[in-house]
Length: 188
Image (cartoon, rainbow, N blue to C red; front, top):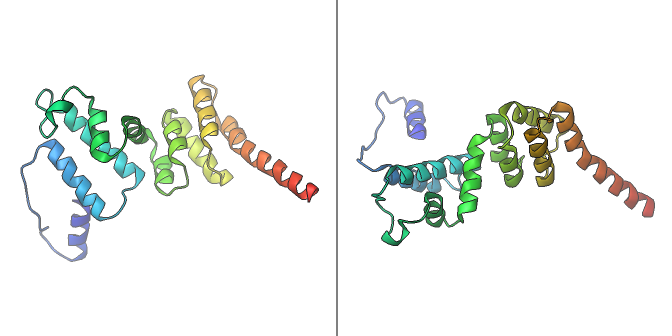
């Protein structure tokens, strides 16, 4: 709806043309997915929200499970959503974790400045520490690898993650690359 609203405003229309349909929550989510697919591949944050909406819609149906095959009634909602979207339930859960990212990191994941798996790991950090990571990524012009993100998550859980620790973790990668480059230069 926001694209239609924006387009109507740009066109100078006082009323927004639309069609109102009665749908279940799950039908509405499926319609949103179809609409977004017409625009191309959704951003990771958009897909995360859609998958979360779809899981929640299935959960709220309770025993009814409209639109779910009878043999699937015993399955967990994330498994059903995964099958509907061609992914396993773990990937669905990882995407849903992206909804826990602060906007700065979510934007980096959408812009491909931050890898998917490191983004999932960083989603477990306290929001304050996520913001520190975002500032460090911008400052270092370096995004964390999966192992670096896991190291940050461990330190955050232990209550030992701070700006200095984040900068140290992000600069490690550069030091290792620098050492490798120096070895190549001296060997060549």
